Amino acid sequence: MEINHRKEESKGVFIATENSLKAGEMTYSKAGDDKFIIDHTEVNPEFKGKGVGKEMVLAAVDYARENGIKILPLCPFAKAMFDKNKDIQDVLV
Image (cartoon, rainbow, N blue to C red):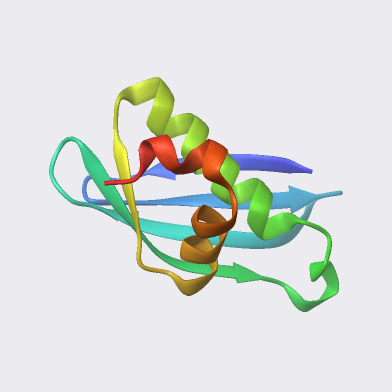
């Protein structure tokens, strides 16, 4: 699985693909220069249960760590991921 990150001025998206098929996407909105808000995570039905959502959250965590940014997970899936995984909570607002 490959996770690509696209940024615009105030928004961004992490897109998961596998074998040239879109497996899912996770969108966020920037909240200033030092944080972003994960607002939606969606996994295509044929990829459910394959860890696609988790991989996108982990890609966002890596991006946040590399850039000194904090994350506010408003998306219920992303929030649940942060609640369950103490080792990624260092990037929370």
